[in-house]
Image (cartoon, rainbow, N blue to C red):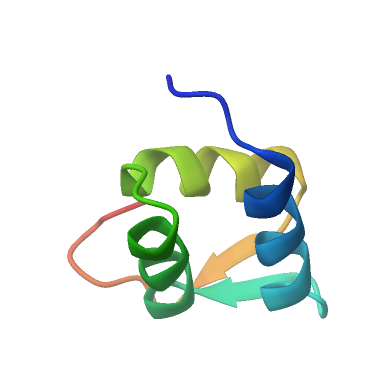
Length: 59
């Protein structure tokens, strides 16, 4: 797995401020930081941020 940068961690924390984040938001973060969706999905899971409205089982 590619290591998540501090910027990725902060972007996910900001998007998941209420403890949840949408699949669309995570895919946007993955694209913005040029990392696979799996990386941001694992970071969200590690941060205990629930992924909602998942599309196509990306996470």
